[in-house]
Image 1: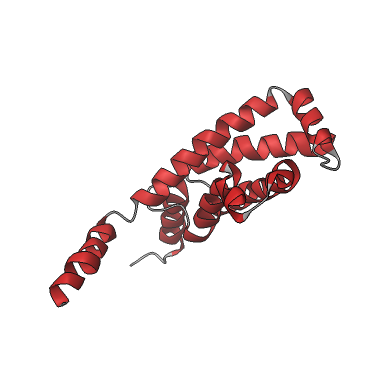
Image 2 (image 1 turned 90 degrees about the vertical axis):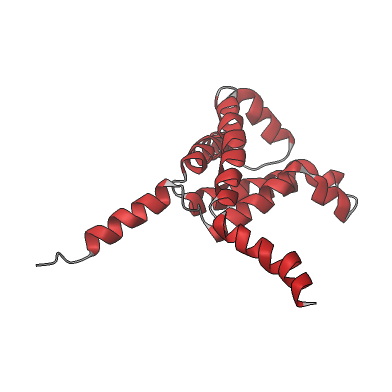
Length: 156
């Protein structure tokens, strides 16, 4: 039984320990790329997106359209870079909650339908990034190292 446990649980855990940097990097690249271009498209078509926001009943659409478009564009860019990752993922997560609530909620007839929305899948990734952080290959981690090094007293 011990060998089976080692082979099925402990060995994959040891391998995963060497690849812990990979999951946040792939998650950031995936959603960062999607939202960088989604935001760019919205920023370049604000009148139509504003009309969509009006149709979905989003309050103050002339304010929230450029705000949301900017959050998507800069949030996506920051995720690609691993810069302000937790803040960017949190802001993008809020946009997904609003998108589900305003544009998709009428289509929800079951938990299966809700969980099948792309927006819900993005929300799950944003939640994970906001909690787990950017990973080792990120500007956030580099800035942390630089500020920690600068905060250490000089040795004489």
